[in-house]
Image (tube, rainbow, N blue to C red; front, side, top):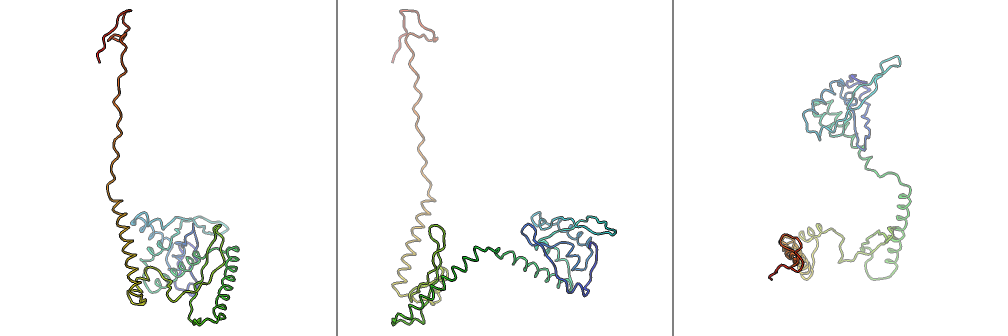
Length: 275
């Protein structure tokens, strides 16, 4: 395969890049680039060497040396150098390829990277998780059925056709999923994010009363004030701890029976000590 030049032949037209996953990352090789872009493999390797010597080390890591086996006939083979590259490495290399045919293969490689990376994002098949999903879905359906049935059959005057329901899932203290709950969302209740709530009020999508707006303003102002006080306390210099006062060392009294030279005095004599 090395140094083999392929043009836009009929076989190449029907071919598609076959990428692989290496250490959890989708990669292609210099061999595939040479094959699909119709270039000699040695020229692709030369282009990669030029790139890696001119770019920072963190980008050069997108290219890794590998070895591939080439059959040379009569059952013999030899090992040759090739390069494995990430999506970013491929994009850096393919920037230098121009022309209509090169553009077509760039798009084909990008599409292949997208497909492989999308497959990586899919959760691994987990029979226990699938079973749990079926169980919770069945329980949720039963809850919705029961809630809607009671709303319609209750005979209340409220217009059940406009009632909104919130389906919620939860866990107990042991981490086990609880029975899903279908709850009615009242006319004065909203299910939205804080950012969206601000936008709704600004755009008049939600029209609260004066008292409700005043309560919101008061609550927000109070929380802002509390946060400001906390920040002030954190920013204020902390009083340094008073240095520990250690009493001056008090010399042990010298016995009157000991002279200034530290030797015992003769019997029946003593040294005068003034206090």
